[in-house]
Image 1 (cartoon, rainbow, N blue to C red):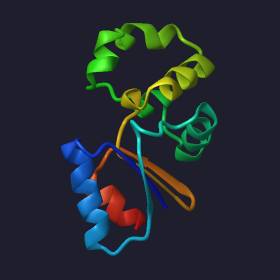
Image 2 (cartoon, helix red, strand yellow; image 1 turned 180 degrees about the vertical axis):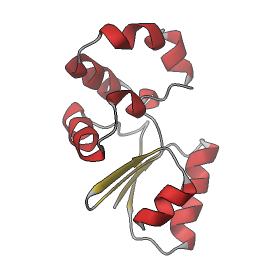
Image 3 (cartoon, helix red, strand yellow; image 1 turned 30 degrees about the vertical axis):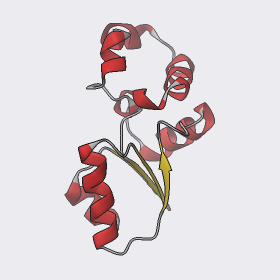
Image 4 (cartoon, one colour; image 1 turned 120 degrees about the horizontal axis):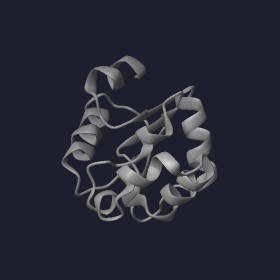
Length: 115
């Protein structure tokens, strides 16, 4: 599995602890240091079955500063993917990518079900 996270994020820390306590095998990647590419995001989005908006960190400072709440509806999917790929801080975290699933954000019951 691939675990994308931001170490200063409390929710990400909880998710990492959750994985470690269960002995889950994963490769970790810091989302700010190595942000996902548009191709990676496109693949994860398609596999997840979620609306693309669910991949945006809507509570983040950058999201608010760029006024994306108002701009996203008029942007194409490709424009949104390019924007997400431009800065890891725009991406919802943590993300867990496994065999046949992609989880955005940490909801313990959902993660437990997939593990």
